[in-house]
Image 1 (tube, helix red, strand yellow):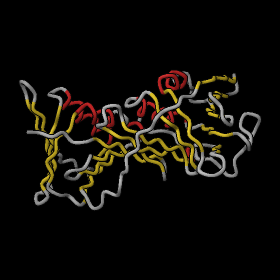
Image 2 (tube, one colour):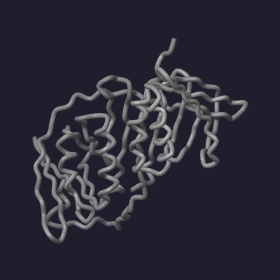
Image 3 (cartoon, one colour):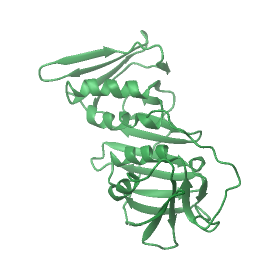
Length: 273
């Protein structure tokens, strides 16, 4: 489902025996959205650091190929209870293979809790509803993190497109070849995509009136379809996908998460002869 029921929480937080004022971690009823975010990140990475900071959970890391980079904020508004402790928060390394298997059993009616003890080597996960309470324990990991300084990209070409439509486009190009060309003609306000395969080719000029854009500049860059598809398949996170693109910079593909959160996914262009 693309339209997620997002639950708005009242303040102050309600505490109970499962999540007290001293509990470090988070609690949410926004199960579908949280699972979609984890599923997207897991499609790119098997293990990642969850950085619990005052404004929410930050995830910033590069994939193993060093072609793509994720900068994500799961905002604290997603949670009914959120506690990152004092100071700058804390960091926990998580195996997404294991976490995803646990989340597969999470039902829409469940409360979901992740909690941590000080200097712990495992996190506690609870599923709570009127019929049961489930208690999981997941061992934590020490993960070296690749950091990349992403500065403000400035006034570059920006495109907003229906995320499901964008995924459909990428699926069509994946049937043709491995790479595609992204081309913008500023004077004609024209955006086109082209893919050449061994036996066939496809060129598509985007004319959808619902596509919005600003600051269009002349651009011609090539990208690996597989990496772009990893982003487009996350279309359940938000109905709109945002694209920022400029010469000599990775393409920035984004989903907004509630009012303050985001996923920015950067993919380096291919160098074509």
